[in-house]
Length: 158
Image (tube, rainbow, N blue to C red; front, side, top):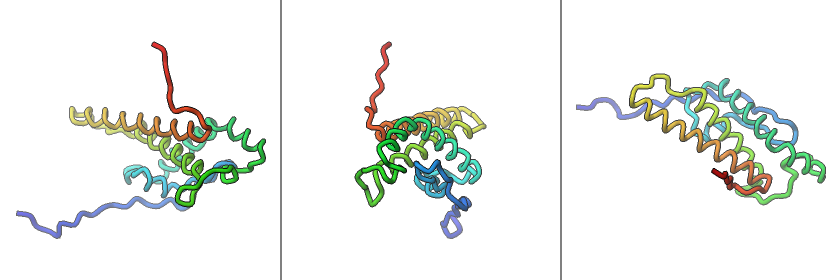
């Protein structure tokens, strides 16, 4: 026999007070928006999330540095100034940049905070989580490639 209201209490993670500033060319990142977009649970503290996002921003910025320098040389002071189509009122490259940063941060969090109790069921869960991390890295790679206009396909000779 069941008792109670049937309501489930969901813990909402604490919001991060401010956005993470960027280099002036690429946009600042709002950790609260990243958490919502990537469905990052409250087991990741706001401090860990900010740390992962800042590292992801640095990584994305390094990957895009040559492209960024070309845009600046062409007279565009920021990503917002680069001509592009808008989806839902937001320029495509802006969305792609955030997708890359969010995915890199999420993949990093998956790698750094795995399930520590690896029972046989936990080992299976860990394998699934590893695949999810790889999926996030792939999504980041695709977003960065789309920004610079490169093919998404990587071919290796065996």
